[in-house]
Length: 120
Image (cartoon, rainbow, N blue to C red; front, side):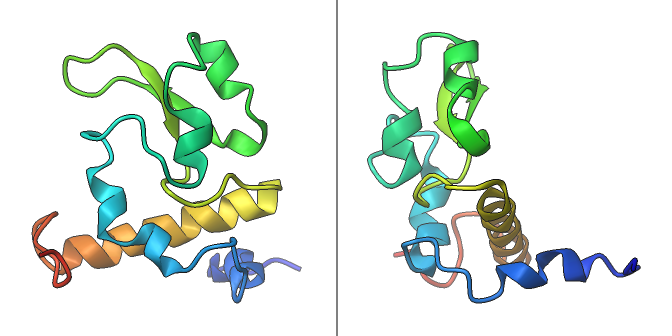
């Protein structure tokens, strides 16, 4: 049975706990390109010098890490789920991305990035 609205795809995410609170998607996660490597959650797994190649970075299970370059920097390995713990399954990864995307949309509607209500 097929649902048109697409929302149902994420109903299994409701109440899913990733071993951290929503703090993992709050403002500190959105300045991550400056403080590399990160030290929280999956950042600690993916970021740093342990992955010297794209293949090694992307080999971490459940799309936990991704390979990208920001600004003029060399490409390197980043957490794909911000400061959440690395996902333990595909559905957990999907739900984490959904949650992060939702948070980013809400945050960007609230004003320019970095000017949210809880930035001090």
